[in-house]
Amino acid sequence: MPPDTDKRMLLEQLRIDPTQRDEHSGSRRGLWLAAAVVVLLIAAGGALFVLRGQRFEVEAAVAAAPSAAAGPTAILQATGYVTARRQATVSAQITGTLTQVLIEEGEHVKVGQVLARLDDTAQRASLAQSAAQVQAAQALLVQFQAQLEQGRRDLKRSQDLIERQLVSQQALETARTQVETLDAQVASQRKQVELSQAAARGAQVQLDYTTVRAPFTGVVIAKAAQAGEIISPISAGGGFTRTGVGTIVDMDSLEIEVDVNEAYINRVQSDQPAQAVLDAYPELTIPAHVIAIVPTADRSKATVKVRIAIDQKDPRILPDMGVRVSFLEQTAKKNGSVSGPEEPAAAPKGLLVPAGAIVERNGKSVVFTIDGEHARAATVTAGQAYGDLRAVDGIVNGVRVIRAPPAEMTDGARVVVKKQ
Image (spheres, rainbow, N blue to C red):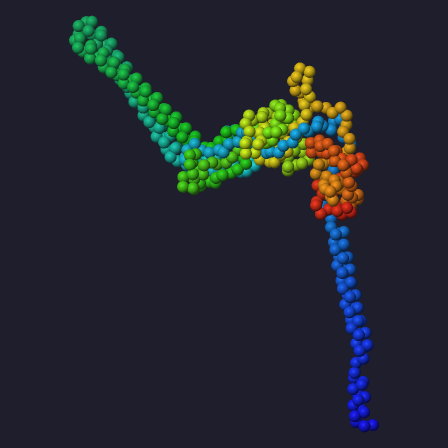
């Protein structure tokens, strides 16, 4: 066979058929497509697994049928804060250096209890000096009194001798003058004794000022100074002087102040019953009543301040806590006076659930009920509010509902109920 023929045959064998090249390219594209589908399926499965595996820790409440004892109807709601009518920042009445601070935040103190002590070296020295002056004045008084008694005896003898004409009239007058002089000295020295005693009492007062005491029974909410710092009741003197040792609040003087829109202030009256709910403890309902409507308006906010008394004390109520107050209806008596809250004639319709359990989903009011370990969304119709509760239709009596569903919660989400 000729060499050219051999070369052509070899070239023919090395040449790639176009049809075969298309088949290989198509098979590679198919493999890439299949791999992409597998990756997408794995990602979708992982996301579904994560979503299904997410568990929400929630608080539960029981939907209950209301009764006539469910409570009076709230005609107005307002927000405000818990305030203390009796609160004091305790300070010393003199400027001095603290040697002891005997209080801590949260500590209960009684009236007259020692809170802090100041350096009293100068005051004790002044008191000792005043006491010595009192003793010196009293000793001099005793001396003048003795001289007066001697002068009176001399005067009596002179009077006896003048009757027998044994002494001159001048000697008698001299003895009488001596008695009157000594009597005046005794009276003057008595005043000196009183003056020195008053100075001693003043020194004792200054010494007492070095001890800071509680002006009333209460709870320490702030500790403002430490031992070694200078305290002054009048100024901060250069920025290193404290003006107070601590702040005490009388917890029995706590009340609530709310701002009511002036357009609705006509719904509020003195002694009107109310209910208060703390932002920190929404499950705690506090009975209260209106003390007074402060007779002035805030022009910047168009509100009127209302003072509200807390009828039931609770250790969870603290100063400056946020609070929501519901003003309740009153019953008008025949004589025109106002009595307590009106008792409803009939039970309201629907079931009562916490107001926070009702959320919006796709423009509808929804309540999430608890079905085993899952949350089920139930569409409801919200009705009348009763304090921090609200009547709804669309769920069955006795079902457990989630108090405050998270925004990302959906139907079928896994939940675990917190232990209360």
